[in-house]
Length: 122
Image 1: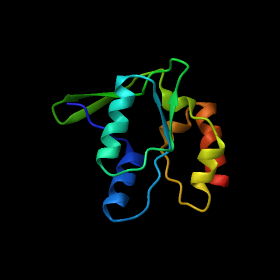
Image 2: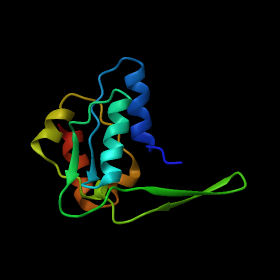
Image 3: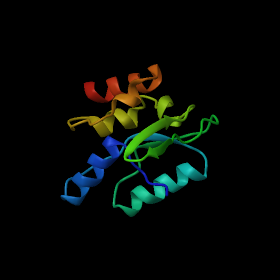
């Protein structure tokens, strides 16, 4: 079945469960999968106000995991909205004075890399 994941999302969920204030910053597509991601994160008690919704037609990113016995293989589907994160004033404000946790995959595109750089500099 489908699950919301990725190391930064997992860290956010665990910190939230420990009672820490968490702001999730990412980008989803303006599609059913993006709405489902937002629903599931909210259902875990996470603040999703920092998640950008792409209105330019880039879909929500996802990874297809295939198991060969106990060995997983990953197909990271492109294009992906998380690659188009923008360094908005809201993103920078959310990161100010905070610990910023991000995954290496989110840095593969210059747009998201710029957003992460802006967040870590806040």
